[in-house]
Length: 579
Image 1 (cartoon, rainbow, N blue to C red):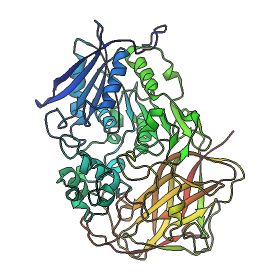
Image 2 (spheres, helix red, strand yellow):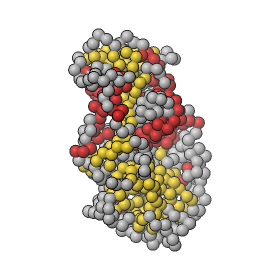
Image 3 (tube, rainbow, N blue to C red):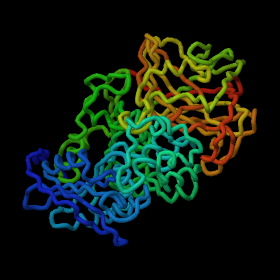
Image 4 (cartoon, rainbow, N blue to C red):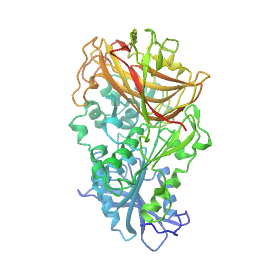
C-alpha cells in the first residue's frame, strides 16, 4: 500500500471549520461533531476524536488544527450525553456502537477518501479501543494514548481495591453532569478533595461533594467483577476481533500503564491481520500527561535528561501518514516496542513485550523479625529463607500510609495527590511500613518487564489489604518508587466470588505491581516496601469484612508477614542482561 517517493505530511494547508454537525446514531440520537478541514478540493483521510471533555476544549482544537493543516479532516465529537450531543451519559456503555456508527457515517462523506484514524488520551483512548472490535471497513489505524484495557481491573478497581483518588475526581465530581463540574484545588477546607477523600461511608462521598451521582453509586455497589462489569465489554474480552493497527502510548507512572501494555500483548497474540502483526507501543517515564506529550524532562522528583524528549505529535503524524495516506514514513520498519530505561536514562527498543530473553529472578524477604521502617533489619536477596521470625505491624485505617507518588490520575494541578517518581523516605519512617533492602549493588541490574510479589501473611481481621512497592535506593539515601501494587484480601482467590479471612490463618497473596523499566545502578540498592494502605490512591480497607462502601466504623488490623522455609515471600523481578 505504501507509495515510495511521496513526502510526509507538513502543516501547510489553510483550515476551514464547520461546527455542530449532527451525526446520527442507530437509535436516532445525534452527536455533535466539529469538523476541521484542509482547504482542498479533493477527499482526504479523516482523523476522528470522540471526547467526553468538550469538543471545543483548547487542547483538542489545537490538535485538530495541526492535523488539518497537514492534510487531514479532523472530526471532534462530543460523546453521547456530554456537552452538545444528545442522549444520556454513562461511561463505557455506548462507545462501541456509537464509534462504529460514526465511522460508517464519516466513511461515506464526499470529503472523506474512505480512510479513518482515531487518536486521543485516557477516555478518548477508551472510545477507540471499544470501537475497534466492531471492525468498520473505514477504520484503518488508531493511537490510544494512556488507554485502559479493562473497566474493572485497571479503571475503577485495581487488585480489588477501589481507585479512590482517580474515581472521586473523575466519576463522582467532574463527570457528574453533561458538562464538567470541577472541584477546584483552591476550594476551602471541607469542600476540598483532600478532605473529601476521608469521608465515610464511601457510598455517600458523592453527596459530600455536592452531587448525587448514579455512576459513583453503581461503581461502589459493584466491588466484585460481576455482571455489571462484564456487560461493559472491556477491550481485553475482544482482542480476537481487533484487526486495526494500534500505536499505544503510555507512561511508567500512568494509571493506565498496564492497560496500554495489555493491549499491545493481547492484540499481538489474539488479534486479526493487519493489526495483529502491526502493533506498536511506546512507554516513557511519565504520568498521565505523557510528560507534556514528550516535551518535559522532569517528572515528580526526577529529571530524566534531554534523552527522554520525543515528539509524540510527530509520531502520530508518521503513523497516520503510513496507514491513512500510504506514505512510507519508515515507522513500520522500526522495532514495535520502545521503552525508556529509567536510571540509565536512555531508550531501549525490542521486538516484543515482555522483552525476549528476560529472566525472572525471585528476591526473597528476610529479617530477624524487625523489618519495621527504614531503620529495621529487613533484607532482600535471591537466597531462599530458612528459619526466620516473621515481621508484624499494625494497620490502622484511621492513620493510613499516604500516597507518595505512583500511578494515579491525572495531574497534580487537578488532583491533590503526589504522582510519579517520588522520594519515599518520609513514609519509610513509619513502623507500619516493612522495609527490605538488598546489599549495595556491585554492578548495574536492569529490571524491565512485569513485576509481581508473592506474600505469605496473616491478619486478625476478616478482610484487609496488603501493598507492595519496588524502590530504587540511591547512594545519598533517596528512595525512588518504580512500581507498586495492592491486593484486597477477600479477592485473593477470585475477583468474582470474594471470601473473607479466617483470622490468624496464613494465606498466600499474589500482588501485581504491573510493569516497570528501571536500571538499578552500581552502588544503589533494591528495596521492597510492604504495608496495608496507599491512601488516597486506594480506599482504606476498614478491616471489618462488611459489605463494601457502607462502613462508617474502622477497625485496627494486626498483620504478620512470613518469610521462612514454608512461606518464602518474595518479589519476582524481570532481569534484562546488560551488554
